[in-house]
Amino acid sequence: MKAVLEVNNLKKELGSFSLEQLTFSLKEGCITGFIGVNGSGKTTTIKTILGLYPKDDGSIKFFGKDMEKNEYEIKNRIGVVLDEGYFYEEMTLKEMKSIIAPAYTNWDESVFLNYINRFNLKLNQKIATLSKGMRMKFAITLALSHHADLLIMDEPTSGLDPLIRNELMEILLDFMEEEGKSVFFSTHITSDLEKVADMLILIDNGKIVFNESKDELLERHALIKGDNRLINEHSTKLFLRLRQTPFGFEGITNKVDQVCEQMKDIIIERPSIEDVMLAYVKER
Amino acid sequence: MLLHLVKKDLILAKKYLLVMLIFAIVAPIFINSKLGLSNGSFISFLTTVLFVEYILFNMISFQEDKYKGAALLCTTPYTRNGVIKAKYVFILVIFIACFLLYNLAAVIGASYGLTRLSIYSVGVALLIISVFFGILIPVQTKFGYEKTKYIFLIMIFLTPFTLPTIIEWYQSIDININIDLPIPQSIKDWIPFAIAVLMGLISMIISIRIYSRKNL
Image 1 (tube, helix red, strand yellow):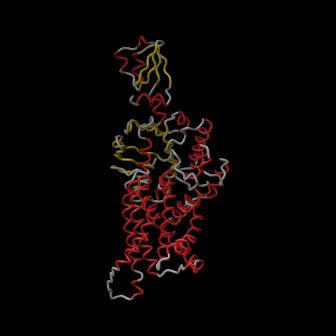
Image 2 (tube, chains in turn cyan, brown):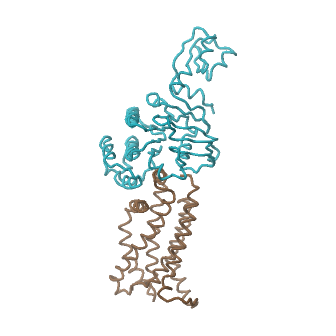
Image 3 (cartoon, rainbow over the protein chains, first blue to last red):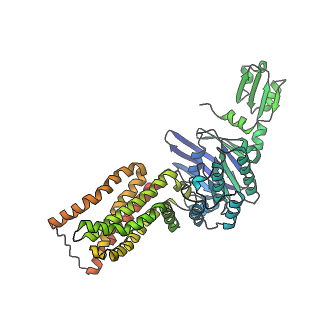
């Protein structure tokens, strides 16, 4: 599979926070979830990749081409949904579209109108009067109406109810049906990714913790439950994160075989993405 | 592409656009009738243009600051350079509109002594606008809308009071800076335009450089 985005040693300082030598890549045909707790650097990474924050060092390549040298061509092939929308709220949907559409060489008005009808949006409505869910749908409409090959979304599901979040996941799956499409999707609501993500990248405190296939990641880890008697100085080291209550322990491990060998009478469950994420995130 | 960004500014200013266009006709007649100066037409035009440009530009900057729309635009094929260039083109477009409306005002207000302007006077007006916005735009790009607003608000409101006094003083001391260039008068008339364009371009380059390092 070709890489649609390659980030190498990306560095960006932003006040007291910094992205440190970020290196990762996105594969074509995959939905990649970019996960991390609030303040971990997801938005900073996405904004730096898109050139909204000038990078301090490193290289960013989209479709094998340097962003700085091929800005126009690359931006024509990506669709972006930002966390806060960044719309001119005094404008109507039609006015906003009339500004965005001419920027793209391959804008497709019929695709745009299809999404507008599908989402029951009204073109003469002011953006300021849209609900958060409707605003996100409008952002997606704008991002998908020029046949983008890569869709980049920063926290699109944040603050949305489960119904709309589910609808968004369906849209992403529809988008992925066409060959050669890819999605990069940051979120701290990891349950959204359980259904749709192929790859997962975890960022914490400005550093990439892991970048691997969701299935492999979840197979490599296990949620172990058992009696507190099994927990001692030696067995504690087998867990990435361990929580004990008077009723027993619950822990996440990436040493499943060793745990199975050394601990009897335990319950082994498949962890959720959130379980794994929290196991790696350092407490602040 | 650039024209679509200018169109964006016109949409952002649309609430005030009609009022400003009417103002651009009425104000020169009113100011000229109140001033009663021999070159009142020029001052009336300059004051009007400065007001219209400043109010519309500020209206747009306010909304840009509030909604941060430039960030979304810069994720599309629009570039940072384009966003900055559009600001300067917008100033020029409004100047041309004000000039055309001033000519209409000169016809309506002929009985009040409002006369049509010479090419030289229009050039000087453009040069003053170019200097004003040539400073305002880079300063605003660097420090943001809020910080810049207060400094320029004081300056712009002082203009109608100070400008006639300065011009009267200038006329009374009768400074005669006459540089005899070996070029025809018809070309000399266009010199202020050339300087205005040059200043605008220098300012634009500075703004583009400042904006290229900004976090959007």
